[in-house]
Length: 397
Image 1 (cartoon, rainbow, N blue to C red):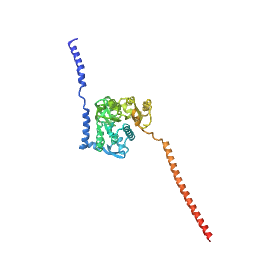
Image 2 (cartoon, rainbow, N blue to C red):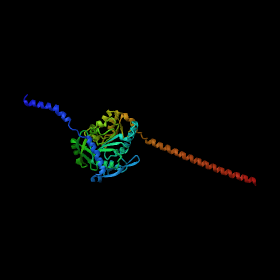
Image 3 (cartoon, one colour):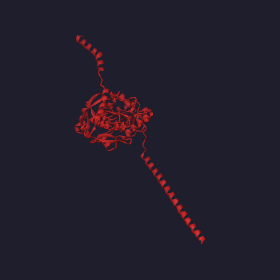
Image 4 (cartoon, rainbow, N blue to C red):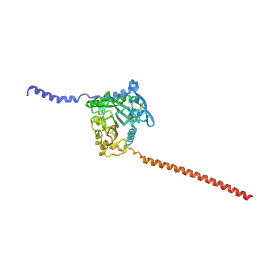
């Protein structure tokens, strides 16, 4: 072996011995500093009222009815979907929010928790913040993530008018690595982003952008949820709805998503959207099923599903064009907090109405009969009295 070969071998050995350790000791991103910066920016936004003219033209003030009180929330005045439903006064996914709220209330009773501030709700794919405002209004701490600058802006405006809500909102998308990608949105629905990276971006551009319906909105920062694990404490409930990007969020957030206190997760299962990102839709459920979580369909949460049939049912009920399902994943040890009663069938409701009507009719008839009987008795007494008076007069004569 010549001298150059020996030098190459020694350099390789030195790199393996010292280079790897130096790389592993490279300075890490200051996640605590990022969290503190977000908190500071949020406070200053409300104090200094640093509003943006372009965003202000798009958002409108609306309200959410929560526990008999109207809570202010800012939504988009020029969009359908979530914003339109809120503007109409219908709210958004009120059933799912009620289920989460009831579960957390039962969880607090079971574990003798007096202060809801000790429980955190994680809102991934926050949109304008309907879930965050709804649960934050009940006293729970909120951590929200959304890559849309407009959504973050609207949520911050809402928090300024809801000072009692303890919430931090991060303008990041979540993924399985820290990177930047392009975000696309429909021309008339810019609060819902489709995030595209690498080869997926090129494929999406070819299939959709060329038609003119979709357009590039912004370049978004993607982060791993587990980066925030030390700063997002006591997460009990989670909502995950990121337009098909769920598998990547789960890959980068297993430490948080399977945290010791996490007891219920509401997740959107959109088969086509997930296949568009190149992932198997079943992959978003399997880690939780393997960890002992039960699965309930949001439209029939009272159904106790045989876990062997979960994936069959998903394929049968939640597959196809424009079809998605909201699912609840509940930790087995906390299933007793998931108390959702099956609604009465239409037949039972109709039967109950008939019984009530018959009962009311019976009471009315009884009262009417007694009144008529009393009237008849009074008339009979009058006749008897008159007859006696006549008999008495005749005797006197």
